[in-house]
Image (tube, rainbow, N blue to C red; front, side, top):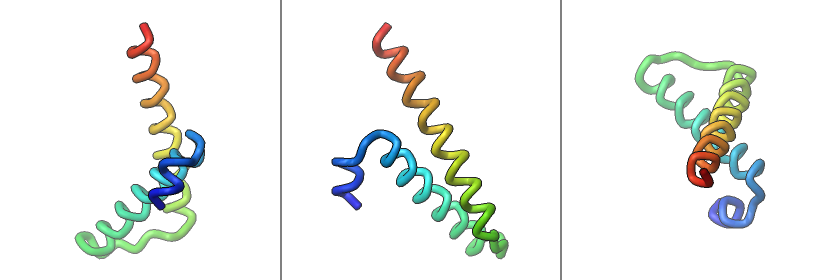
Length: 66
């Protein structure tokens, strides 16, 4: 995992981070709310988090460069 995060291209890293976040959120819902999520819902969360992460990176880089 460390290798992928250190050596992957930006898009790969975004997907890995989004997947980890979605799985962790799903796990917490099962533990604390007793709510099981279908796989499709978790995949939608990965897409959402990946898009958000990309937006944050773009905004940060633009603010940093200008």
